[in-house]
Image (tube, rainbow, N blue to C red):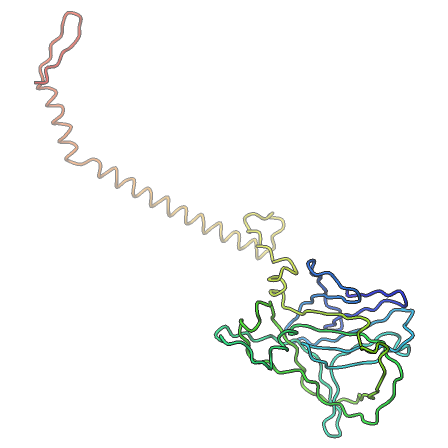
Length: 313
C-alpha cells in the first residue's frame, strides 16, 4: 500500500477502493519514490466504480488536513480532515447542485477508445489532458483558519469528455482507461464550503500520492506485473492433477492420435503392396531370362588347376 511516514506525526496512507476493498498495488522497480511522494500502479476494470480513502495515523498533525483529488489531471473534489473525522475520509465522487436539488455522481473506470485508423494527433485542447491520462493524484496540504462560505452551490466537476484517440496521440504510453462519472442521482448529502489558509505560502503539498490505473494487459505490456505464462500441455501434466473435463479432453486427443496413426499405417501397407506388385514386371523377367541365356551361350574351359575361363567374345 502507498504509505508515507513523517517525524512530526503519524503516517499518511491512501488506497483506491473497488466494491469496498482496496485494489492491489504494484510498484515499478525502475521508479523510486521521491521524498513525500509515492507512486503505485493499480488494475482498472471497465465499468467499475471506485473511491479514494485517505487515512492519517495517530498522532495527528496540529493542522487541519486538506485532501485534494485529481482525476486525469483535473481537480474534482477536496475534503477537510481533522480529529473529528478520526483521521480518515473516503471520497466516492462529487456532489453538485442543479437548481435547488443536490445530485451525486460516483467515480468510475471507463475503457479508453483507441482508433488505429486515426492518423492525426490530438487537438491542442486534449494534449494537456493526455499527459495526465490514466492517473489518480491525491495531494495532502496543511491548512488553517477555516471560514464557512455563504454559498453552498457546487459547480459540476470539469472532467473532460475524451473521444477516440489515435495511437500517435498517446506517444507510446500504455494507456487503457480513463475516468468518467456515473449517472447523476438525487442525494440528501450536502457540502458546506469553507475557505482556508495554506500553511505553506506556496501551497506546496505536504504529501502526494499518484496512482496510475491500467488494464491487466497494459500492466503486463509495461512489465509492471509478470506476463501470463503459457499453460502446461495436458500431455505433460500429472494425471492426478487433471479434473474431469481435462481428463476427457486428454482421452479424446489420445483417441484421435491413435486413429490417425492407424490410418497412416494402413496407407503405408497399401503403398508397399503396390510397389512389390509393380516390381514383378514382364520386363524384369525377360531381362533375367536373357541374362541366363547369354551366360549359357558363352564358352568356358577348365585348366589343370581347376580354374574356369569364360570366353566372352
